Length: 84
Image (cartoon, rainbow, N blue to C red; front, side, top):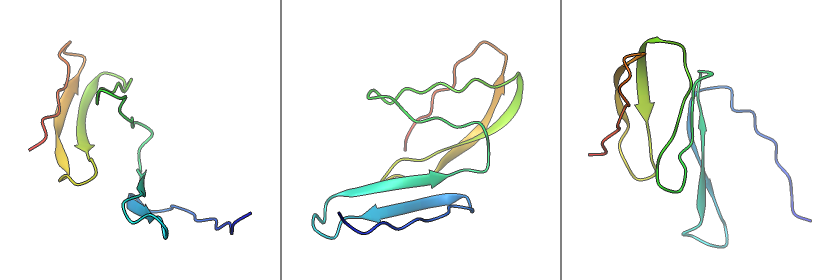
């Protein structure tokens, strides 16, 4: 059995995990300071259930820039995040 290391992610941000054996193998951990978050499905779609109101959103993907904006929930319109 290999070594085990426990890490506490107590600050928001993106952490990248590297593989010492396979240079192209990596994983990402995104720590957020909100109870509203989502991960995408295989098509890139996601759903977040929040109360009606105005929100700021942030979207990130590996190799891409941070996308951010605002959305009004309760208007009946879906939010579509466009990657640059």
